[in-house]
Amino acid sequence: MPEAHVFRLRVYYEDTDAGGVVYYANYLKYIERARTEALSEIGFSNLKIKEKFGAGIIVKSCKIDYKKSAVLEDSLMVSSCIKSF
Image (cartoon, rainbow, N blue to C red; front, side, top):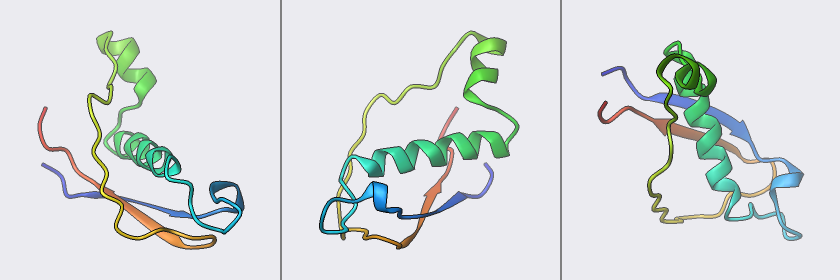
């Protein structure tokens, strides 16, 4: 398996609440963006998979343990890897 894919992003004002803290649901958006970019890096896309294989990649479940809040203008890294096919 290839090594982990790293997706970097910056927290924008639109991602935060009035206190400058990232709204909890936005972490799921960050993860989805990272997944899309990881697919692209190995030569796939959600559209390509749908057209070529008639399939889609869906999220079956998601468990998040929030350790520390991200805040306005933080630089974040989402690291992802393929566990199985």
